[in-house]
Structure formats: C-alpha cells, structure tokens
Amino acid sequence: MLDAARHRADPADILLRDDEIAEIGAPGLAAPGDAETIDAAGFLLHPGLVNAHTHGHSNLSKAPGDLWTLELLLAAGPWISGGRGVEDKYLSVLIGACEMLLKGCTAAYDLMIEVPAPTKDGIHAAARAYLDAGMRAVIAPGAADASLYTSVPGLLDAMPESLRREAEGLSPGPAGGALAAVRGILQDWPFDRARVRPAVAPAIPLLCSDEFVIACRDLARDFEVGLHTHLLESKVQAVVGKARYGTTVTRHLAKLGVLGPHFTGAHGVWTDEEDMRVLAGAGANIAHNPGSNMRLGNGIARVKRMRELGVNVGIGTDSVTCSDNLNMYESMRLAAMSSRVQGPDTARWLTAEDCFMQATESSARALGFERIGRLAPGYKADIVFLDLGSINWIPYGDPTNRIVNLEDGTSVDSVMVGGRFAVRGRRLVHVDLATLKTRAEAAWAGIEGRVAEKRALFERLAPAVNAFCPAVAHRPYHVERFAGRGD
Ligand SMILES: [Zn+2]
Image 1 (cartoon, rainbow, N blue to C red):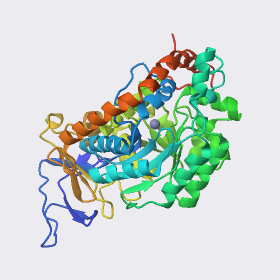
Image 2 (cartoon, protein in one colour):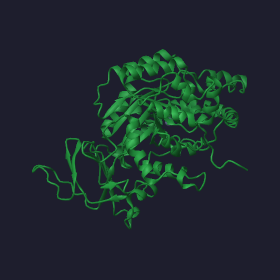
Image 3 (cartoon, rainbow, N blue to C red):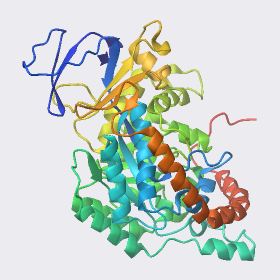
Image 4 (cartoon, rainbow, N blue to C red):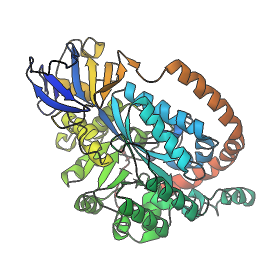
C-alpha cells in the first residue's frame, strides 16, 4: 500500500467495513469470520485520484479542435455543447465517468454546462450517470448572463456589421431563468450526497454580471454547497477583468464575498501574489489543470508559490474539448513538468509527492468531500489497484516517483469506490462499453445534425475572435505566466 510521502509501499492488509476503511495493519490482520477476502498480492494500492475540475457535458465532443485558444473554445460552445437532449447529457457524463474510473479516478468536480441554461432534468441525468458508473461527483450547474462577445470590450466593434448582428444574437437567456433552475436543483436533490452532491457555478466571472455572481453566492450560502468557477484562466480574462473592475478578478470576487473554504476556482493561472494571499486567507481552493492551460495557450500557473502562500491546490483534467482525455495520471505528470519549464531552480519545482497529494487530498478538499483521498481508517474505501506486472513497473522501483512521473493509467487493474468494485480486471463492472459506444454514436449522429448551423456560425465568427482576443492577451499585465517568453 502506497505511502506517498515516504516513497514506499509496504505489504499491508486493509479491513473494510461498509463503505469505509476500518483498519490497516501488517499482513495477517485479524478480520471477522464472515469477511470476504480479496487477494491483492502483486498489486500496488493507492487512494482513488480526485479530479478537481472537469465538464461532463462535453464528453460526446472529444478533441473537437486543434489550434484553439480559450476564447475560440468558448465561441465554439453552442456547437460543441449544444443540441443535446436529456439522454444525450446522461450518455455524455457516463462516458466521462467510465474514462475516469478506468484511469484510476474515483471522484470529480463537474462544472456541467447545458445550452442554453441549466435544467433539473439535465443535472439529474448527470447525477444518475455518475451513480450508474459507480463514481462520486460534485455537479455544479454552470450558468452565466452575458456572452463572450459583449464581455470583451471592442470585440463586437471589430466585426463586420452582419457578423456583429449574429454574434449579438448569442447572448444567454435572462439570468432569472437560470437562477431559478439552479435553486430548484438545490432544493430538490433526491440523490445520496455521500455519492453525488450539487454545487453552484457562475461559469466565468467575465461572463457574469455582479448581480448574477452575488445571487450565486447567496444560493451557495443558503444551501451550504460549493461554488465553482473559472478563475483567471486566460490572460484575456485578466486584462479585461482589471479594466472592468479596477482590480484583479480575484480581489473583486473577494469584495463580493464569494471566496471561502467552499470556493473552488479552476486554473488561477493569472493570479498575482496578492491574489494568492487573498485566496489563502479565505481558505479557498484552486483546481490546477496543466494540460488544458498548455493546450489553450493560457500559460503556466504558479502552483508552487500558491502552495507556499497557503492556497489549497487540487489537480484536474478540465474538459475533453481542451485537454482531450480525462487521465489524472497525465495531469499529475504535467503538473510536475509544467512547474519546471521556467528554469533549473529545483526549489521552485513541484515534487512527486506534492503532485500526488494534490491529486488526492487537496482535490478532495476542493470538492468538499471530507473523508476521501487517503487510505486510512475512517476514510471511504476508494482504492485503485495497480498491476505491478505491467510494463510500467518492470522492474519495481520508487512508487511515488513512478505513479507521478511514469504511470499513464495502463497499469490500473481494479478500482473500488466505497468498498465496491467499479472496475475489476480492467473491465467496468456496471457499464458495458460496447453498448455505450453504440448508444453514444447514435446520439452523436443526431446531435451533429442539430448543431450544424451552430458549427457554421462558429466558423464564420472564429476568424474575428482569433484576430481580436490574442491581441488583448498581448496587452501589458502586471504578472507574466506565458512560458519561454523572450526572443
Ligand atoms: Zn473548465
């Protein structure tokens, strides 16, 4: 069983009771006579990985674009996330849950976006998908009350008249409808909160009025749930936010009373030192998504510094539309590597144990699940069994370094969530992949037709967005997060 901090994995027996770990001891640990025995010889056991940021709505649209910035991805939203019925939403979330489980991840924070606005049916479908796969999740219905086009000053003006009119037509519906839907979801939650629980998500502060953010803050407070948002993901958000608020987005959210231990900001790439202190002081969480940040050209988050200043930083994959897979082993590895791209000062790098703790205990804290992310008595029995006969482990060596720097998920043999196998012998226990493939491809065939016009509109808008937004990102800002700048 892995002891990440000590870089060891000594033989151990684990006694489970109900859905929890009751006791851990040396081999030969006493167990009740009627206990079922699972032989884990030849396997390395580690706590289930916890994905601090993903988007269940997008798993039917894997890797849709290539040279996309965040702003192009947002412009593509109606195409790549629209046109879905309730069954499509269920399938989309189920695909993600299956991928995560097969790759050793047992819980996720899902910022679930429905186009044009959240619905109770859609969010309930997402919850059922996680439950059916056998995974834990926090599901935050994402919403906003402004579009990219009205939120980035000058973007509409830079467009020819006819295109501008089309872009103006893309604003989300009135805020009241989205907020009422979210309130309804929070009021009527029929699922076991130890497995799936709801949260609130003003999706991106830049796309939300202050009134909308404040209403979300109050919903989170009244229903005692988490609040999840994208925080300073791109430089465009940093530059436009500072011009709009007269201060940074982080400090503006602090002024609105949004930050607290229940707050999880995805990314935080463009946070400055004072932002980090404010987040730490509030007990707030950051979900670090290094794959997405590099994929979209958003820069490298200063995770080591955030941690030094006391910010809890979990690790996530983000969406399949911007990091293409939901592989937490890859996210850990990229977290380690991306901390190193700016120079040879090893004191500024994340260690393997830093990354492992972030992808387990720190992410668990960001989700608000109290007793997951660790193999210890009193914790949930969310356990990954890595096959030490896999090529990644031949020959055997330092387990913490291997898991973070080498493992790619191909050694995952079995995955237990709450003491029950969701993956066993490399196969999903509750979902038949062949059936899922048939259903997903039929669903996508229908969606493709329904979003064809939205795709065509994206293709008309993309050149204008891509001519304007990168220029905004080249305006001066008081911190630098792009790597390898210079000649
Ligand atoms: Zn995201």
